[in-house]
Image (cartoon, rainbow, N blue to C red):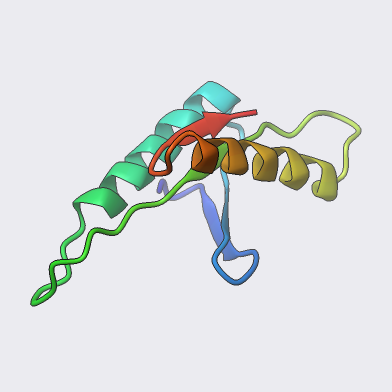
Length: 90
């Protein structure tokens, strides 16, 4: 993540990263860096493979928080259907 980004827990296993002044293509690159960092992470003493699926959506003028999060959630579920450990843009 970059210093301008904001991380928060959204639900049980879901997190939001808000990337101010970032279009969806740039946000995709941020998401891919996060995904690859998680994939490369090794927990000392364990042979676990940790991955994550990520959905990216861009805030559109005149929409509410729920709408942009809903679109990101739809992209997330597309990533999971695609086989997990990938990033999808809505």
